[in-house]
Length: 168
Image (tube, rainbow, N blue to C red; front, side):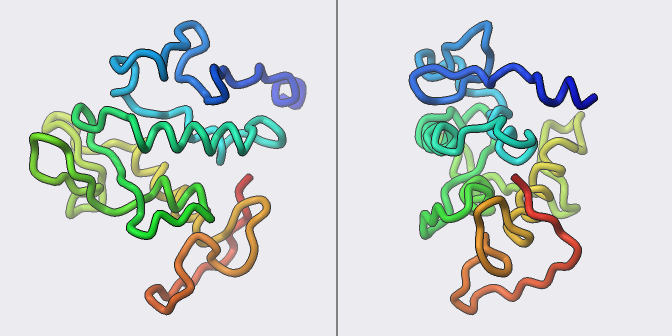
């Protein structure tokens, strides 16, 4: 297992940004490649050690937030204050994202799940990603400082957390 972990292939990138598929690296050249889940963003919190270059991931996140086709998928917007201290906070964004041509879509349904098609009542990857982002905001990430570094410290939030480990 350790050999597999230490011999992972580098994440595919083109022009200083990560791409969705190494075999089809047109994520940023072809708008038709920017409508599915931008799942490559999760690498920042999931790969151990030096697996992700923070500067490349920041450029990738900026590109996703500015040019992803959210009309074909419900998505996340930028937080109101556009605070980029925490990549997780930026990814978490506001709870609502205006989707062109439709009413605003909520990030979560009343039962706490991500809304999906009627025949897919629970979308667990989205739920897990949301929980991971909130845990990172509360517990911190490599290089973050203080308690609950992903939340505002202006008195608008009261955050209590215990037993969380910093994420990479």
